[in-house]
Structures are given as C-alpha cells and as structure tokens.
Image (cartoon, rainbow, N blue to C red; front, side, top):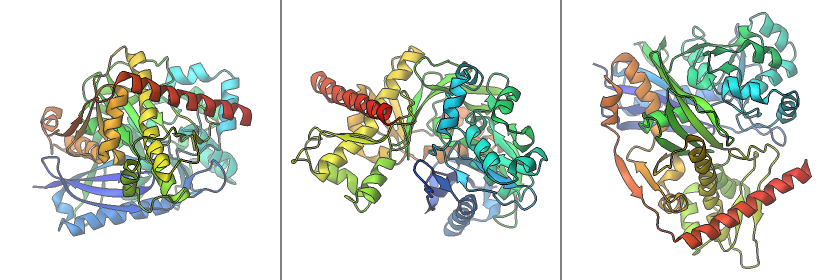
Length: 498
C-alpha cells in the first residue's frame, strides 16, 4: 500500500517537492531557488528547462531523504505559478524562448489596443478576467510574433503552449501528455468559463492557432504516468493553479469561505460555489476547480507584490541580509513613523488594475530609519489585502468575518495581527501553512482513492493560531487614510509618466 502523495509546488522563485502522508501532514520537503531573468524594464523571464530540472531534482531529493521509493507514492499532484507562459518545439521538446513570467509587463501596450477596440466586456463576459498583460494569452501572442518562424510552426502543429503545469506534465510523461486543468486554463484570457472550452473568437483576435493549445481536463483525474522517479510508474492525478490549490488546501469548500495566500504576490479567493459572480469592483471571476462534473468558481483579487517587497528590502535596498530578519527590524520601531510604501513595482493589481503604476515611498524625514521602512513595507502587504477584501465584500454582498491565511508571510505573527486589526476580522492560520502543495496533494489523492472524500480531508484541517482585532477605530481610520492618500499619489504619478 502506497504511503504518500508527492506534491510538486512550482513557484515564481523556487521549485519545491513535498511528501504528504494519509493524515495530510508533511513528511519531508526540499526546495531549490532558480534564476530570475530581467532582460529590460518590466520584463521578467525564467529558463523553463531550469524550472524542469530544479523540479525533478527536488522530487528525487525528497524521496531520497525520506527513504521513499516510487512504490511508496500513490500519486503526484502539481501546483504552479499561474499565467507564466512556455512554448516548446514538439519534436525536440525544447522551449523556443524563455518562459514569460506572470509579472511581465511587455504586452501592456497591446492590452491597451484591445481595450481601445472595445474588447473589455467580451473578455470579461467570456473569461471572467480583465484585459491585462498579467494573463497568458498576450504573452503567447508575443512569443509567436517575435520568435523567428514560430507562427508558421504553430499553425503547422509543431509547437506546444503551456502554463507551467502543462510543461511539467509534458516533461514527466516524456512528451506523451499535453494537458492543463480548468483552473489554469481559466487564467489564460483564451478560455471561455461559460462554455468550458477554448474560445474561437478570442483566439482569432489574439492570432493564436488552436493547434498549439493543450487539452483541458478536470483538476482531479489521472492524466498520465511518469517513470522518471524510480522503477515503478506513478500516476499524475491532480493539477491546480497555485491559488486555487491553496483555496482547496485551506478547505474553503463552501460558498463564502475566503483565503489569502502571502507569497511573492498576495492572492485572495472566495469560493462562490457553482455560481459565477461577475465583479463590479475590478476583481476576477475564475474557476476554482473541477472534481468530476462539478465546477466550483471563485472571486479573486490579485496583489502583484506581496512577499516580494521583503526581497526588495534584502536584494535592492540591502537593509536586511535574510528575509527572516525583517520582523525584528520592523519591531525595532513603535510604528511606521509616517512612512508609507506602495510597492507597485510591477503595476497595481486588484482593485486598481493600473499596469503603469510604479513603486513609491511617502513620508520620509531625517528621522526615518531602516526600521520604519521595513515596517511600512510589511504593512503595505496588509493594506493591499484590505483593499481586495473590501472589493470582495461589495461584490459578494457578504460581510467577511474570518480570513484563512497561508504562504510565507503568514508565519509573521506581527503582520498577521496587523492584518486582523485592519480588517476588523479574525485571521486564522492553519497548522499546515503549505496549503498550496497540500491542495494539489488532496486533488491527486482523491483521484486515486488515497482519500475517500472531501469530508475526510476536511476533518484534517486544524488551526495553529487565531488573531483577533486589537486596534481602536480612530487609529485604524488614520492609518487607512494615509494608505489611501499614498495610493492616490502613486496613481497620479503613473498618469504623469504615461
């Protein structure tokens, strides 16, 4: 009897492999960072081959460290950085260009043209998305139009497109399987979430041949097998984009339940059940997952720069040497000293959606210290989350009383307390905060009978710490007013720059 599910968590800055046992507990984890490529301002790329090599390396390493063979693994679940776009040659299996990362803004001007053509309503009605360079469709178009011979090869069926999940499955199955799941497909700006298929009109507008696209499957089924991790073949049976996987891992399986993941960016999702809610407040309507014939939808607010602001403090300003130092530095001062950081390094996401905004720091004086800047940077993550939550409450007509949290920054107690204070709601951190990988594991395990039902999995979810609001309303009002002024000034600056 197999003992584990292997989750492959392919993120924006690192590849991880995590083993989960029958209780949903982590048995072992191995992580490896890979290179971030910035060819010019606003461009962000990854080497897709390095992503694959790092992912298979950590998978083998976590098995080795835990004396685990391929016979011990019931299935593999994959979760991935979404929207990041890879195109590869069918014959050689090699990418024809670097992966263009979700943060990349090179197609912003083309997105402006689509809006000018009056495409916004059609895109929103069909895909649930806003026209933005964030999504895969315009990135794919850019590769086909800028790599010599790519469009001709695509029309001849000689190229494959995929988000990172598709690329990993293709590599794991040695080129036999070209698939994605509904959650990742719904992030491409090419997939019709009403008809559950690639949309011919949008493909024609983007000039993308349908032959290049993967087959779209549910989030929990056997897609294929891999023989690359040992003598015994392992089923690949769960796929979900990282934020949808985290929603499932947090067991937000009922309508109205909300989670926020604090990763490179911040991503808040509300499960809306089998009902699609069209946002009036610049949120996205997206597919959460599909299990069997049942499709669950979600409202989503995306913040582009969350934990990445800490990387900026470390690598850009060099005021900390490791990310873990930020909490102590922030606690070295009593408050932010009037400093507000708006980390719009890659534009502003929900609910503003301004792709030309850039990062700003306000309120500097001679008394400002590294501690004030660090504290303001951490607070910016919570402020952006506040903006998204308020938009979500307005769309759903539901007053949110609790927020389930996960991701790297969720282990920061001071920040989670500040988040609770801002939201005037309970913030709940589970015992297992690796909910992205856990969600992928659960989806994979359900498909092969490792777990019998969602109810069995729900019983495993446990609270580590609950944060309750501890801030008087006057102070809260003052803090929010400072943040709103800073955002308005940042947006005004982007208008001038434009």
